[in-house]
Image 1 (spheres, rainbow, N blue to C red):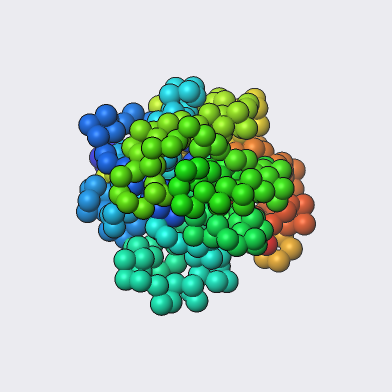
Image 2: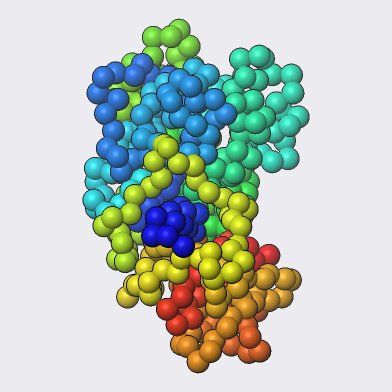
Length: 415
């Protein structure tokens, strides 16, 4: 194999097999029109730090040069091209970048539909709710494949291959202002997100108040009850935002209020996360960048395991290392190498075929938040490493297996 082919193979391996970067923090954002953003985009809003990225979730990104499933610089709009403008997520992300360590990168996924009920994000109710809606809402729903919740989860799973989901921001409730069941309905959606993404039980959920002087101000009564639903629920105040956008609806905030609201969301998120927002020491934390707009996020289902060692560029032993804080670091690591096979998951056990040949073994399981949760280095029996699935809660995990100088990083799902 020529040197040029080796370099190309190494680049391909790094694009497809890179482990999640614990310093790439992902935030999910969903809701209705105020989360879409209805503020006019000014010149000041078009300059964005490269550390702030958006994973575009809508089918059509022609209004901003974005493509579904690809990371790009987070210039507004962030939600879709069906009328979305400047919203709270824009300055949430900017503030998170500004007020966190320079090693931290921030990514957002925004899924929002104007006028919608929380039912649109309920897995059991969205289909019936979407039927019979007016054409303008149907267009927005369809830009997310007809299932906004499903699209949010789809994009979030892609994002988990590159970074770590740290929190959720939410702005919805105007449509459901008179529904006393709304707080519990929101909790159900949150619980589904946590389960479907295999997240921990400490993911903060920040809900913003609606316009206090607006026609839907009564929704704030429901929003105030959200912290009763979960220890992870917090309310972000809209106090002082009284101008209302001049669109005749008396529901939306002005551009400046969206900027200030986004800052409030970020300040609350930083307060809640505390030390969890600090950077993690990694082998290449100073140089790793999120995918640019020119490269799609690879999903685990697209990985094709190499069949022989001749087609694999084995990374150096230092390419991926566990840090002193027991977190997984970013690096080039193929799923399969000459001595490490593809993980097999069944109902009771996860096994990884290995050829030891007297080499040392280092095998660990990491949560999708990047924390080491299990060491199975001493489990080698009969040509394989393994552990019982009963040792872990259901969810997604990353396996880091090293045999001698060869390293494999694989994503597995424990049920």
